[in-house]
Amino acid sequence: MSKVERAISEVSKGSDSSGLERQNGEVEEETDVRLNISEYNVSEILVVGASGPCRWRDGEWHDAEIVETRSQYKTGLHECYVHYKGFNRRLDEWVLPDRFDIEKIIKPSVSVVKRSVNIVAQNKDQAEIKDEQQMNEKNEKGMTRKSLKKRKFSGEELNENVNKDGNENGKLTKAQEKTERKSVTEEKEEKQHEEAHKVKNIQTIVIGKYEMDAWYYSPFPAEYANCTTLYFCEFCLKFHRSNDALKRHSKRCILKHPPGNEIYRKGNVSMWELDGEVMRIYCQNLCYLAKLFLDHKTLFYDVDVFWFYVMTESDENGCHLVGYFSKEKFSEEDYNVACILTLPSYQRKGYGKFLISFSYELSKLENKVGSPEKPLSDLGLLGYRSYWSQLLIDLLKNESDSGSSGGLSIQQISERTMMKTEDIISTLQALGLIQYYEGQHIIDLRRVANMKMGSRGLPCDPKCIRWTPKNSGNLPLSSPRRR
Image 1: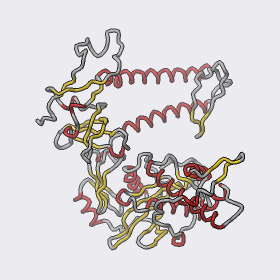
Image 2 (image 1 turned 180 degrees about the vertical axis):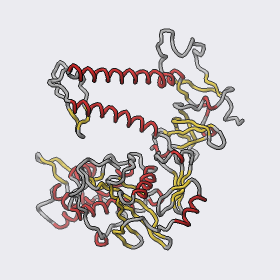
Image 3 (image 1 turned 90 degrees about the vertical axis):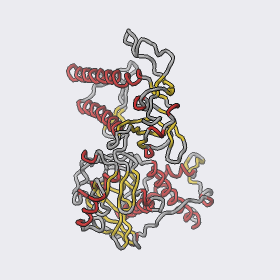
Image 4 (image 1 turned 90 degrees about the horizontal axis):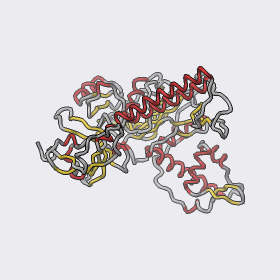
């Protein structure tokens, strides 16, 4: 056994205390225990919740927290899944004990662990029982609510009417009670989903000539649970456990491009439109792949209510996947993008702005104002904010150079760009171009002339689009699920 995997025991003042819990059942206060070297097993030191210096890939030490532990599938070595504090979760990774500065590890006291396992669970059960009892009392006796909480109702904040004594002026309807109960259930499910997905299940993927580190958890089928690397066919997107399996599949696969209609081509760049209802397997595999790089994406197996627009680069071997965006066939909120991704191997080449621009060009052909579905990821927000800023600055500069005396209103900008007014206002505010003057907000064109923006990205040529807007009149009016 190596020195790192030798024992390190926790030593603290008051180690001779009578136990983790006092005789009266009270739990000790939350404390941190500084670890010193001694004869002890490292698996009992590097536990969930412990934190301390961990050496990153660049050789520098960063403060990290242990999120999960396991024994390596093949070697049985103790591994820790760490989150580097102050950094995005995409950098979380599995590390061996030799990456830690063991002497500086701070391990949470056992009383904290006991509290999280027993007391929190007990309180949760009691809270659920209490909520159920209160709900039953309301249903049976017609009692009014006494809490002043805000609940989600039909997608909006439902502010309850209460008087000064804290009682409602009226009773909740059965529909409202059902909505509240559903809201609590969804909130619990979201928390459970977040906890379960903190740890990446796939570490790397191979697609085409690129090998990429995964960023986030993706719910692949259970039979792929022990795979650290997945191998994707870059044309049909079927995934395999080994490179040999991929090679056997490649001999049988007849596709050389996405299985959809090519609606744009300029040079070696193409865009393909796919109906999720028709190409269900391909679109599901695309979503599995995308979830590895998107933190805010919610994955559903029902892809029937989405259009998928896939971007490729072509060469003598075929059309290689670059990125994509999906779009609801019918959106009550006028979203023109549900999910958007450029693969890491193609990022920083201007393809992200191309996809954004292409989505707005489709909105222009539909004559509909559009906006991306919120919330955006951190990289998605940067991409959109950069695109919006460039677009608005160019438009305002052209308006200023033309010498027009009438100026531009927010509504006129929206009609020209197909951007939603809230996106326009938020971008202008971020640029500092909206000023308050004589009781109204105006756009300060004097600052526009001196503003310089970054890369414009790969331009999208509207003349190369071969696409007809879809008739959504026969689509169901039920709210489709997000993707």
